[in-house]
Image (cartoon, rainbow, N blue to C red; front, side, top):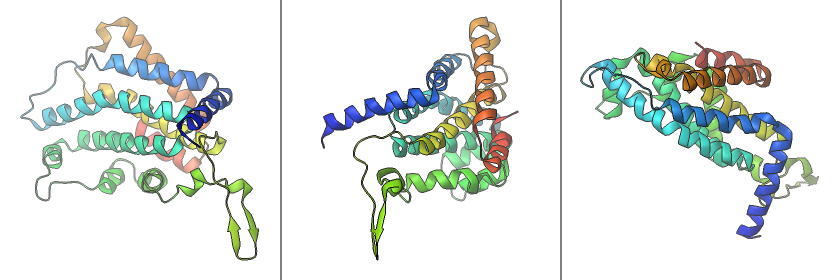
Length: 250
């Protein structure tokens, strides 16, 4: 096995991803393209010396970064690099939950960002404040992947495992390999995170100028409708569905 072999398996996995997800796989790139355009229209922000202004400055740079991170996550997901995509999605979900939290508690934002003594707010506190229960049902699972706790599930072919007495053998997956359940898990968090950012942008920046560009305004509306439809039809876990809906819908 070498890099050329891995790249070949990634191309095969990408074909399998497109076959399994169809227009949804292509639609994610279109959504991110729209999200890049939206960054040009934050409008006037409050003075940075105010609580609301410090929050908006923090939100502005998180939103600027997010399409780059999400684009990378989508490309990794398409090539069946599920661990790597999950690590980026954990980061993106953290960023969005922070914005939801500091929108409500803007007076706490600057001390958190500048790491003042006793100024940092724990992520679990943020999650529990924004959507009680979401930390366990969503973030903790992504963290297990990011911290390596579940890597055997991505690199070991559990369906082909064998047992003989005390000996348990799990064949290793070499290269990239499309796996429907893992692909759906990552896809679910892609949809959740993208929908959150797109739905809340105009809340974070109430003086945005998106309406001044009719084409971008229509693209944003269509992107939100498409994501909401995919969310409604593809998030099958009822507990995650309810928690995520409270996080990303207005």
